[in-house]
Image (tube, rainbow, N blue to C red; front, side):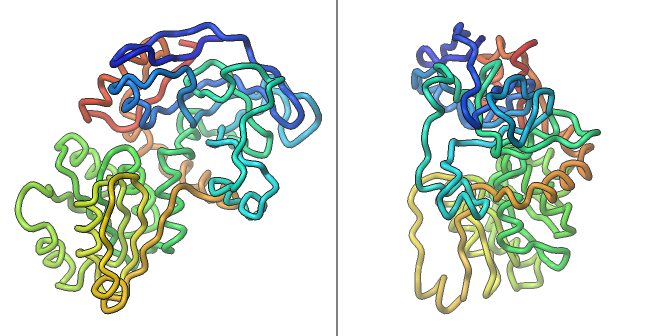
Amino acid sequence: MKVVAITGPRQSALLDKPDPRAEGDFVVVKITCAPMCTEYKGYANGQTTDCLGHEAAGEVVEVAQPGRVKIGDRVVVMPLYPCGRCRHCLAGQYIHCEFQHNPPAACGPAVAATYAQYTVKPDWMLLPIPAGLSDAHASMACCGLGPAFGAMERMNVNAFDTLLVTGLGPVGLGAVIAASHRGARVIGVESNPYRAALARELGAEEVLDPMTGNVVTRLRDLTEGAGVDKGVDCSGAPQAQRLLIDALRRRGQMCFVGEGGELAIRVGDDMLRKGLSLHGQWHWGLSGAPLMMQLIAANRHKLERLITHTFPMRSVAEAWELQLTGRCGKIVLHPWA
């Protein structure tokens, strides 16, 4: 099979690797869609590797034993390799597994990548794709919509809420879709004009540029002086995180979704006197799969805009260069094109 490798700063190649094999409850999936995430940072920095990607959709092509999927099933490939037995896995919160591990050696080398033509995964980590949903749309259940979906569930976002999203990259754009689906009023903060415009198309009522004027004051003007009810930071930037905390109303809630630098929390002013609830939300739990598929089915027209570009896998460097410009939403690779 073909897999993508980073070979140096802004250099990549397609390598030939042995096709993987099924072993135990690990099954082989032929990847049809591989959404791109933050791997472009490694491409820019020259972090050499041939194990890239963590989200995909495709078709089951080999199983070693009867299980939860069969050959021919279309599935979403969820990220990481949790144990399936610890308390977090058993609760469906596999992302917090205490015993992440590698696929069995018998499956072959380079089988954990999704910038590849095949991957292997435990059968319980594969979500069935309902009839009528395309593989590309279903693949947004990973990082396209997943972190934001988890944040909305965590904070019980609803139609009574004004929600602020800071950072309107692909994850933040997914947050706009997930929050507007729930009926919330959505306001964004983003300095990239391309992504600000796209956020408005996807359901944001307002998008404020943090480079112009006092954003917190403007947000209070938009909320009758109270501040926003809830927020999601998808930027990972401490300045944006602090802005969101300052913009929240008293007893408001926010989720940290984006990873980044260090942020100073003022326990007295932020947590005690203002009474805020601050959550960390990396992804979402498997018990939410039916709701996730409903979200995708109801927003197929918006997902057509969230996925702004597709590339054959052989053009991955071109896709990474586009990501570095910021003039894109979610990008999907096609390994067999």
